[in-house]
Length: 445
Image (cartoon, rainbow, N blue to C red; front, side, top):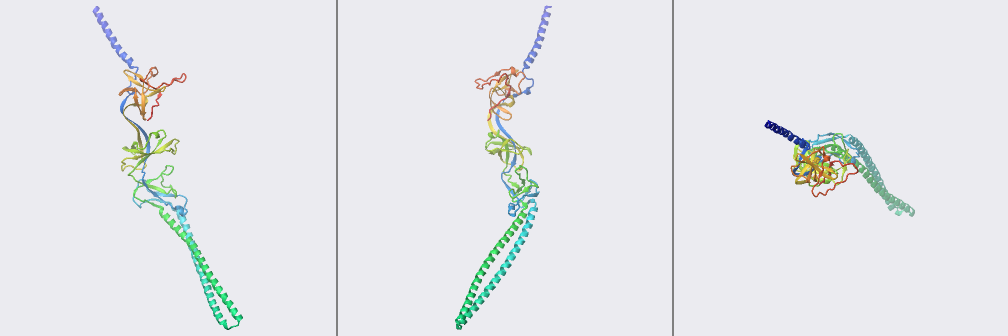
């Protein structure tokens, strides 16, 4: 009987032990989250800080296709409309028609110039006739005066045998004839000079009208815009960033209709905010992706970073223009394509790093919740550079450590485990309000 009781006692103890072990395990496990997805593992690898922006492809070298550039010489000061324009991306040869401009303003000016030219020609013809008539009369008067002088000379020669009074009268008549001839000679020269001046004046006006007619005719011919060289037609953008197409205005001050870019050299033009631009420098490597072909990835280098910010349309923020030269562009690239640019501003070899959301800050001390056995500890860490997703850990964690992605429910009950020799001083709380856990202000590169 005693043996039976002892056997049952041992069975009872065994059952209680079997019950106690799972309960103890469950209690210990209750301190840690039950989902492994709440943890992140500390990784060791190369760390990069990437500034990501979107940009637009552009060809820095191009040939302009322009309309008439001397319209002000034809007194056409207002812009003219583009009536037709070949589709963007069209491959053209030298001399191919690219666009036609509205000729109505220059057609009206051409009619006015032709009318003015006809008037100038009539004035020139009238001046020529008047000059011919006046000089003909002057020559006739000069010839008559010369004959009269010769006649008076004969009379003077014959008066030698006459009375002195007759001789004197004949001498006076001769003197008058001589003076008349001299005056007529001077008048002829004056009228000749007047005729030359008049003809020069009306001739200059006639030539001016002829030149204006040639200019207007040349301008009208230039209203059919042709490609100066072979290439692909790319529309240009106005100061508002809109592409200039059919219906847009072309003027002397903005004569460009389109461009023929050199596709052997391409660059991505992007705009970076004033926070990130201080990280950028000429020569930094960049990776370019394309919305038109997500599988394509090309490399590039930062070619220029603007020193002065600007305000883009429909935006209040100041941005800085950055140009990225595409290395080894291929034939599929086209100006105007949207690019995704990843500019590597910092690269560190073989460092520990964790996701940003795992590192918190309390009273100026950065820390993580590190998994320790079945539980976790509130561990101070020392941080380094960070990017958009991760932060470098220089002290406080080891490779393959696990850290919580979000604080546990009983985070306020855990004490902070400080780093040996830590120089970070905890800031005292203001008043009775305890400082909550916030994201750390990690050191930036």
